[in-house]
Image (cartoon, rainbow, N blue to C red; front, side, top):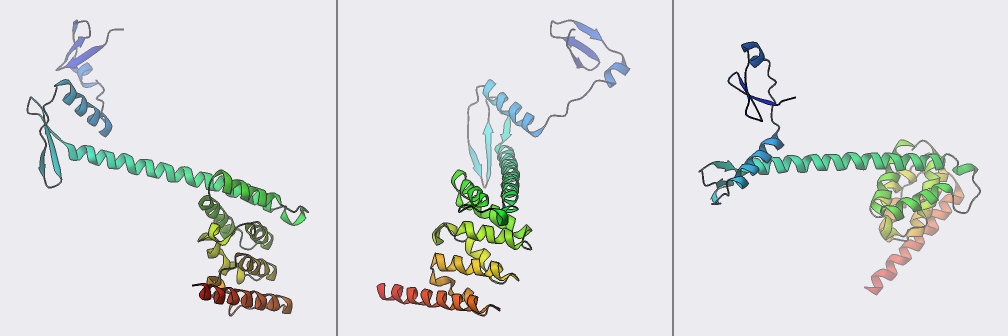
Length: 245
């Protein structure tokens, strides 16, 4: 099939043949609307083919390129296109990140559903948490854990499983997202969750967490005693730290 280029009702093929088109045929020719990226590509090709002589003229934020034929190209259009592509790539990366978080969160939730019936020193949920931390980062782990906690705050077993897994980490490794979870755990209606939250504070041993242990609503005497001991330990650590300084 011969390709024709339509100009004012005359179709010219790539081999030089011409063909008279009727008015109806001329009107029905499909007109391709170039995209922004097409315009940019054409613009750049034109500059290269004409072996441009570049003269930069700066006026405020406007930069102009002049070719040998005095064709003017506004580079601000290119900057605008670059910004558009950057924003698109950022949005694409964010969407990809959200999908990954959702996938990892679902995986962790599936393991937490069997936490209470497992009798293992290292639960399957804890293994998933370790896997996320090692394959991705502590930051990714924090995003996933917070997502699971937010959507499953009414499930004490889920929260306990997460707290127990976080006991393996040091304070510096889980800041800031780890400490953000503590107020919710400490004020949970289930005192088992409160207990594990206190265990986290005790394990991390940072005096900065002391204020979180005050004015808690605790009914179990044994938990009150445990909190009292943790407070004393943190206060002692604080004093020793000040003496060291």
